[in-house]
Image 1 (cartoon, one colour):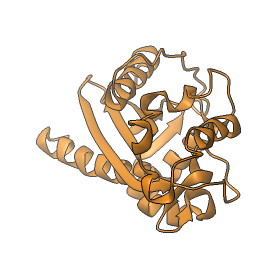
Image 2 (cartoon, helix red, strand yellow):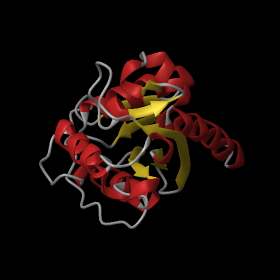
Image 3 (cartoon, helix red, strand yellow):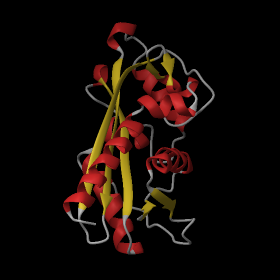
Length: 200
């Protein structure tokens, strides 16, 4: 079965494709399929709600099975912020660098032991008949005092996991422990169960 990945973010797209392909799931971008995704207003109150909104929009407009995710960073010292507003934390058109700068500024007086945080990834898959299959992954870590690493994808340069930022890890290392990797592997199991239950 082929799925459209409902995202226009090229870095997220590459990560999802990279993780899904070895799991035996054929996933293509809308661009690869010669289709265009509509912009979706992410007005849900949870990651799961926003993932559904994006997946459903793609499913309705494209007419085939779709997968979407909504992910974000929650920092304990900031009462869970930026959370579902992670992408808009420093303004609608802010860059990753600007979002990181705002985050570090908010945490400038917070000591290392209190900089705990976690990434969440909620994934929604809408099947050809409209059924939904969902999965969620969480990765616990902490926030570094300064960016480290070469990969400037989201908050990766400041998210520490066992002494390394996500941006310092290679693809295999990150995929093995990241919130998105965890969620996508769970999704595969949920899809297998769904197909077995529905004799598909």
